[in-house]
Length: 422
Image (tube, rainbow, N blue to C red; front, side):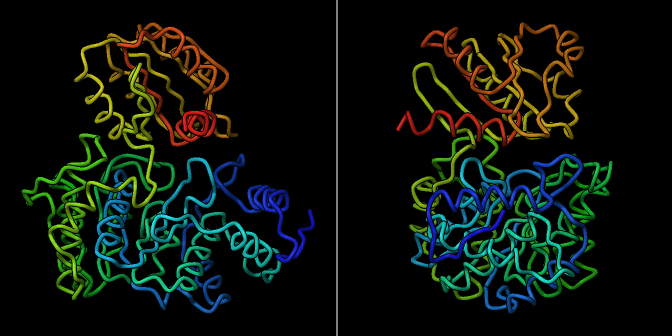
């Protein structure tokens, strides 16, 4: 496909450019390819090609298995309440590509994305970026152009060899370490913690939010090795209400508060009121959705992007706190180990297993034996929307509908239904 110049930008041309990006650059949505290219050599060349925009940014780096998105969005909300101009880089997006790059809660404009994709087509042959590497340089460039005061950068995968690890941050944080992406990061908690700890840098405070003593020791020892101050957020005792209502957010809030305390030491003017208002207005300030997101009240309809065993355990625990019957729409992608997930499914529930509409989406027929072993009442659907509509038809207004299992399931659900709701 040949793209037109930025002067000829149209919505159709923009969509063609996005389609080209997903088709040409290795990313998670193509069989046999990955958004993850271990190593910093490629991102280093890419950043140099664009004049190293990351060097002009004051960054906060947030890694971890679960909670990166919630933590970074809560922090962004607090900084915005403190009157700072805040860049926020998250992944993946749920509906629109531009969700990945925001300034003060506003998504980057499509004209910018279009222009950057044109530049991608003109890169020298020796630079062959992955999908995530290209979105990362796009974020750096946009934040530089927007002259943000602070840029909050979420790690894509792992840490040590992640494209975002090219930055030098003011403060870094690791929310937690759980088993996920074992095919890339290692089969054990120790191996994964080692990769996550790779974002720790000399003389830069590192906030740890994991309660596991093994993980604590790995992060603490890495901090000691490189000369970074180690801060254990789990020791904090704070109580801030938030519009992010997942019970798992209590741990993320501690990490956010610890980051804020370090930023205040660096001279940022953040008041107690800023902190309280920031926690209370995350959705309004940043547009963050998909984490224990209440889509409808009757029946109570909730979606959550928890997608590994640790994340789903907490989501299911919160679901189990409701006595009424649940209608649970779940779907997974191919690289997720779901054997253990089947053992923790909430009881008193009807299940609607669906296939996410991506190449990596796993069809429920592929794990039907696990469903039969779990002895839950279930139905199988070829797509998310059919599963949701079936649940909606069967649920009474006093029961609960839950949609989750994968970012892609939640994204597909919201894309189909959020606009009509609004």
